[in-house]
Length: 355
Image (cartoon, rainbow, N blue to C red; front, side, top):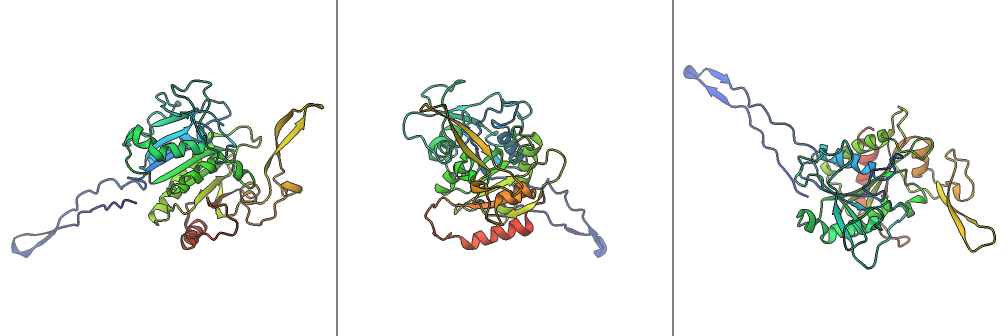
């Protein structure tokens, strides 16, 4: 990671005739360096880069995250799925052609967020096509976009000759907790990054009470918290590729404040589950999503057995939750970066920014 040193001018002393000392007024200091200045950040998600739906479920959180990171001084490039890819997990495309198409007309209100950054916050949508991406063109998966970016896409499109310093995914429309983590394309994209040796964080925000609308207020609060969280990790040299961090934010759209960040584990129950209903006696089944109760009364697959579960602390108690995610699925494999893991846990529990 690059280290930047800010040089300050010390006050000088002018000795006048007769040995009388006069203090010279120090030069006015320049503006304080932004906390993420010089940090090169790739952003992806699984909600796409469209941000066109009234529900705010198709990428608005990505633009809030881009906004906050650029405001903190980062140089940001977005490579995200062309279409919504929610639930794709770590899926990849094994053949064919992908196109990374730059978006020139950004969503209203986000056009100038990164205008001062070297890469100007360039936004690319990645589709499965040999030509231009159209309205109905199939999309690359979240993991595809990260792999493309790290394996030549960033070099070709924006001239980054080295890997970014950090990959951020999200902000997802809806929390990714408990069993949903395995399905999450937002988490899957972060896993793809650490698999390539690049530090990564995956951000997901709660929706409103209906869980069908995702307020801008939630995305903005999460993005601004996320920028400060990343700044704290960076200042402590805790941006590590050994594992990803999953950061979920509660609903604050009705005016309540999020409670402080808590270090958690992924829960062993479900919050959302897949339901299948047969169509009469045919071979076809309708797929639907079932929603478990959030009040701790769930049974069967909805039952949560861990006291430090992300779902409990996020949905029941209203805290920001942070959990480490590893790419290594071998059961019982110890985390090699245990010292770093402990330091990040202590930072989250004791020194993380207040929501």
